[in-house]
Length: 149
Image 1 (spheres, rainbow, N blue to C red):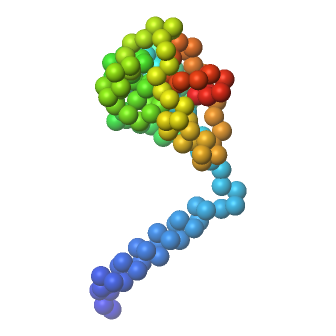
Image 2: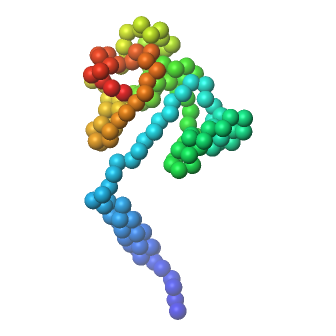
């Protein structure tokens, strides 16, 4: 028997497989993903047991990491808190915004409510949000009650 496949047959098989796989993932019971972002100061890659830490046990973090997606190539956009959070929320480099620097709790807000942010993009995809803030991040212009992170 001759099992020689031609290029067009290979492409057809790949396209068919891709469409079949895509359609099988589109069920009526499709749910939005659970996205958990844990954004902390001074937590290094090797400080969580799931990534090899041995001095501190982190069972809850390990459970989340071992049962979800682990990002092993993440980088901080800045060495300090406010610029890093600014970058996470806006997707913009903090050094392009002069006000995105270490700020006191009384600093004016620096992200305009009209600006597209990660929470707004998730909300547009109908993904419910819950967040815990440290309370000193003055980023969004307007009331914090009007603009939940």
